[in-house]
Image 1 (cartoon, protein in one colour):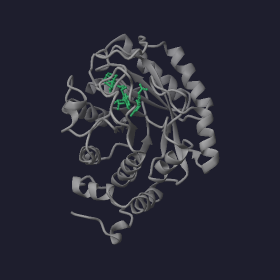
Image 2 (tube, helix red, strand yellow):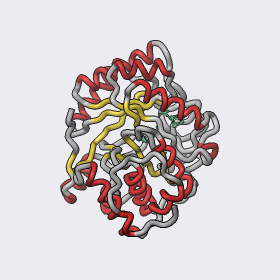
Image 3 (cartoon, helix red, strand yellow):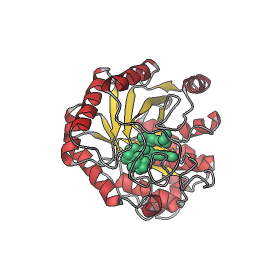
Length: 330
Ligand code: SAM
Ligand code: DTB
Ligand code: SF4
């Protein structure tokens, strides 16, 4: 398929898993007003237009990671000044989750700088954290690196709502991002999570030096999953000094808007999360991202190790735009 015409802008009610890169590219490259119109139309057919899911992150194990992901401040391969710590106590995590809930978060996401989730006591402790977060009435998400089939199963039994495991970019660009693991290993963990009944949170990063074609390939791979990942985080690279990607040029904010809109159109029913990179983008650009179909953000003043806009910024953003936190339905 080639270029889009106006007659093709109607809502596509059927979830598709067979997008071609050319189709996605044609959508991505539409004049911005046409792209936003189409993304909004799709968005409104599946979601409340002004509701935003608020998720809060906590790094439950920080730094010293053996992987060499070029974007990551927690890789042991780079000097980034991030202060590492071992796996936190369950109590400390539940205190943070309670605070996040008081501040309006409905999903609590626990991240660990592991290549793969460990076995034994540390894993049991993570299971306790998951149970504790669920007992607070929040959704629980984890991102612990690669998982075995059994580990995914056990997380599911502990009540885990979602597992975050990003593909980050296209299969073709992946070895420019990380060489200590393969794309196929990532896909394997995603399959284990899907088989366990835990929902998938899977997305990527823009601004790592990839082409627009790489971004469309990522969306093609994501949308190729049946069902689509329930949640799709789109991160703008946070350029952390000491990482190999520190000196890359900043992303044009309109590129983020286009990426979100294309993700929204490709995966209409999924939550599209404007994840890392809100710091440094104006409230007006962030609002364009909502208009493009983002309906989830990370709240709180920290992501895993880097700053996030924080509560007063988001309260003001919501007040000025009439956006409101999405309530949990279950
Ligand atoms: N170690 C686990 C893994 O890689 O699967 C989980 C934690 S890892 C920090 C989670 C995700 O954060 C990565 O997949 C990546 O997409 C995102 N991320 C990490 N550093 C980032 C940065 N500097 N800018 C944007 N996103 C980043
Ligand atoms: C995701 O896609 N982005 C979040 C979450 N999933 C785990 C992490 C962003 C990390 C940004 C860099 C940092 O704070 O260390
Ligand atoms: Fe380790 Fe995850 Fe960072 Fe890669 S992204 S270096 S696996 S913590």
